[in-house]
Amino acid sequence: MTFTLPDLPYAHDALAPYMSKETLEFHHDKHHQAYVTNGNNAIKGTEFEGKSLEEIVKGSFGKNAAVFNNAGQHYNHIHFWKWMKPNGGGSKLPGRLEKKINEDLGGFEKFKTDFAAAGVGQFGSGWAWLQVKGGKLEIAKTPNGENPLVHGAVPILGVDVWEHSYYIDYRNRRPDYLKAFVDSLVNWDYVDELFGKAG
Image 1 (cartoon, rainbow, N blue to C red):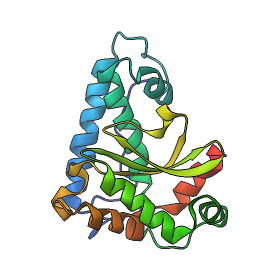
Image 2 (spheres, rainbow, N blue to C red):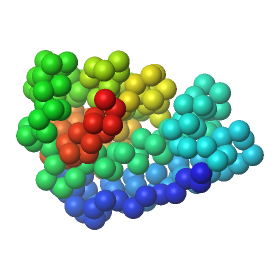
Image 3 (cartoon, helix red, strand yellow):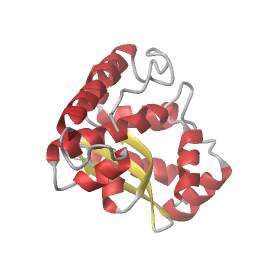
């Protein structure tokens, strides 16, 4: 399959003031577009042509860095745009998800603290995740374009901690960005949808 840049599910200015129009213009229109373009070029003539995005991500990990880096980031960003929505965040979660967070992660407040800590603690570029592994919810972090798929887990929420995702709005204040993400941006309905499929 050929990678294509998905449209944002909202206007470029819809996430302000937590994520600015300028950030989305750079992050979606330029950075994500580059992963699409470079990924398509890297896949040409390889064994990954014609495979699904998930197959490409899993199959190229540790074997073809150019394919993996761009396919991984394409996968991550397709979901990242959907993991946010205007007037998102808050502590009102779909029931089954809230129950599972309470069971596996010690409650919503502890989840928020630990998820932010994973994002802050990821040295350099990478992602923090809420993932399903072996039927349990876990918090994880990965470097660069890696994601839980290549570690036997299913991501149901991820936050991009590459500097280009927050530097325009927060400069070097990654903790403030992560707080804004969880408190004001997360689309819990989409997280719940992915949780339902991962179970």
